Image (cartoon, rainbow, N blue to C red; front, side, top):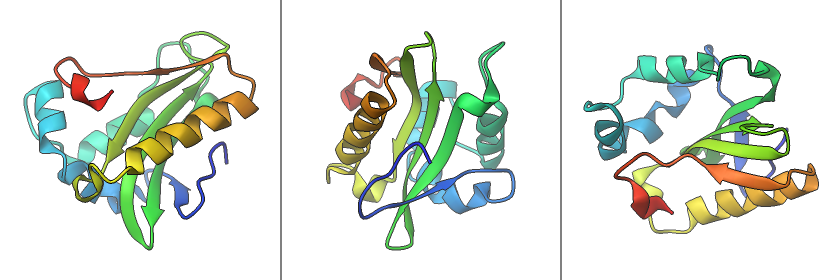
Length: 136
């Protein structure tokens, strides 16, 4: 596992378990309306699992859910070596709305940065949807 966060369980999201993380998506309708003009659908998670930049090595994609005490609290999509070999890209860091403003996103972001440093990446980039600048 690329990422380890004390007090949290991290589980890769696959086509077999993607519905387990649906609650995180469902509690963030504004994010999806800003992105595509409509609320999230479960099939969108499946699309995220298969979505990769053209020519990108799929083994460098880490799409996982983060749980605390059995409850899903966040979804993270990381691309190692994107857009440059020495960079880590956070394509998605979505926190369950019940955990907004409680430091969960910050803990996750800091852990990602620490993991990227340990792995030797020179930098971390975060994809931000236009109109969602309040996240940074």
